Image (cartoon, rainbow, N blue to C red; front, side, top):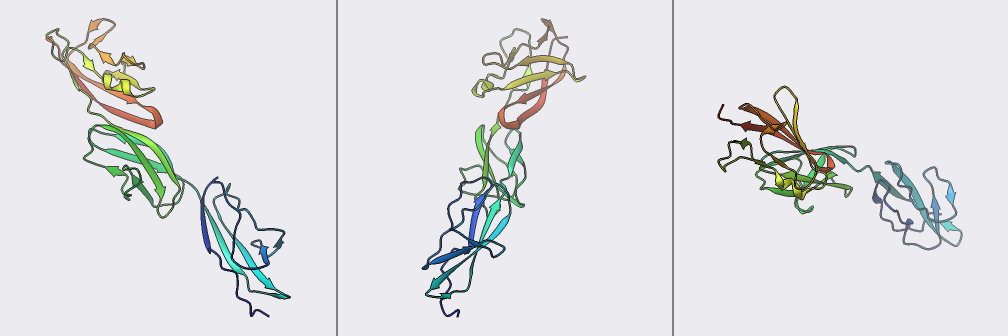
Length: 235
């Protein structure tokens, strides 16, 4: 007969993909465990977390020859969203992510507050840790976003003002690459080491004509910044 109560269980258990899982537990005596198909298991199962899916397990308790009704435990394994790129502006960050379950939530304050928008505005200069997760899930990814105010005028006339385009703030980042192009896409200047993020407005030691140039800064973790530089000469 089923006059015995079912074991007490936590009916839903959440894991992130590839997270270390613990053996399932229930409160009762002489427990019997069953897989999702109802097959009796030799011991309490340890959930597999290598695939994002929901798996049901069942457990009963027995007293003498009486076995209780089955209690169900659903183990939900969630894929973690991955941050694919971060677009930086003068005072904003836009976070792009894929994978996991929509909708996503985003945080830049060490996961204290989360928001549904992938854009953060009114940011001051700095390096931001950026988190993304599937809503209602603890499966988070973290990356680093950069907000920089980079100079955008160079006047290489040796008057002591703006003679050099100083991007040396990039010294603070490992693997930063700075590329400067003319409007036809010709690479004019490239730097990728500390102490080299300074441009004198010249190409092959020749002063370049007054016009707009384009810079691309590539940082670690798929961060990139682009913008215009105005080079002014006497000519």
